Length: 269
Image (cartoon, rainbow, N blue to C red; front, side, top):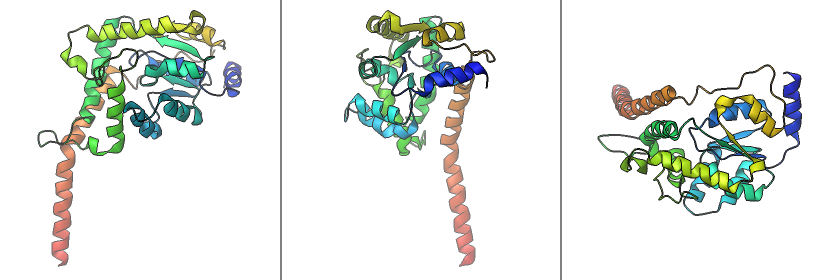
């Protein structure tokens, strides 16, 4: 590890609570920023920690307030939050941790966000279907996937004031450009509600310099700014295909196991 990395680690070691809020919507480079913040010594919370899925589902369903999930995040040692659903409650987080800085991640254009968001949600919707003979999905029998469905329904319901599920899936009934409009409305809300001296509007293509200047830390001298390959268009399409293969392959596997078991039992008799 370089001396710059050691300095960054030391700068973060005494932190308590949430020190940085990434208020940008998903598909705006948040995973690349997550990797960058890890290099800088933060413990970033990207999307959700699955061990918190119960708290998030209860909050999404109105059974508790945002402090439940914020406390779960902090109690697990995270000091930076990124993407949906935490960006939906960035004002609540800032109210509880007023010294936290805010990064608003942005895409090159609103249209680029819209295209990318659609790819993500077309992937996730595969896990939300109920079981049917036409689509024998088992995902909603798994509590985690059922809870994540509730979390996605919650997205867009706070300052955008959209009906539940509209941002995640209701866009399919909207004209082209509707998602781009929501992106711009969200960004405008952040810019209007965060003091300028605590806000960085950031495109990850800008690299280390503006981010490190804003965070008052050293630029890593031996590492390029990360650009995640985990959440690309190609990887999401592959993930969707994996989900679909799982849906259609599990029944033949179960039938084969039952048939094999019955044959074995029959021979023993």
